[in-house]
Amino acid sequence: MNVRTILAGNWKMHKTAAETAAFFDAFLPRVAPIPAEIEIVVAPAFTSLQLAGEFLSGTRVRLGAQTMHWELQGAFTGEVSAPMLRALGVSHVILGHSERRAYCDETDRTVNLKVRTALAQGLTPIVAVGETLDERRAGATDERVLSQTRAAFEGVPEADLSKVAIAYEPIWAIGTGQSCEPDEANRVMATIRHAIDGLGGTPILYGGSMTASNVASYVRCSDINGGLVGGASLDPEGFAALIERAVPVSS
Ligand code: PEP
Image (cartoon, rainbow, N blue to C red; front, side, top):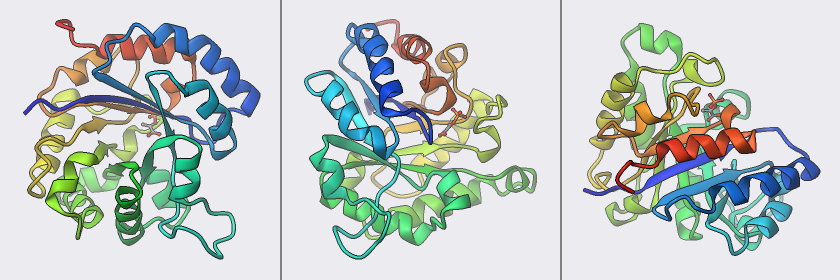
């Protein structure tokens, strides 16, 4: 099955609005010639979403958010809802990132609630799963990612699974410079694809110290359909170079 390629930048808690503007001034001209079949997403902090939406309006780059609440409105101080994101032009939302699972009480249950709301509200969830170093050493990688994947999509109709993306992010590879070997990442990602029926056409992205130097070795693998990129998405030239190197030679 031909699965679309997504390159998504997760800026985490980086960049003020002024820094966001400077990024897009440099980035947008660089990525304009990239073939349209590559889906490019940038997920800034909430405080930069409005400005980023203005920059990205009418371009081929899509706007992402880094999380959201599962309720549509209400007494949830500090939270942001799917309709609020949609109103700013957001099309994708990262859910279940390991940093939110570790530091912000994100659980399999809340990820599932958020996935269902995102889909109902027309947002593309990018659901992050991955194992800790201890789990990998204990041989529990597959068990971990399978249970996270099954929990995230519990109750989601099979027909909706083509509307989501999954990011396999080994936690020990995030921000460490210690990326997972492409063949091993591909093996785990094939396991994820077979976790439940309906993931055959779902983009599965690798995340964990992806750079312009190693991206090509990932995207040539059979079950790797792009990347979720943290540190290397912060520099406009570097992120544009990474995306260029992810384009298949035949494009
Ligand atoms: C991430 O934050 O999702 C990530 C993969 O970070 P990095 O690319 O910096 O490892």
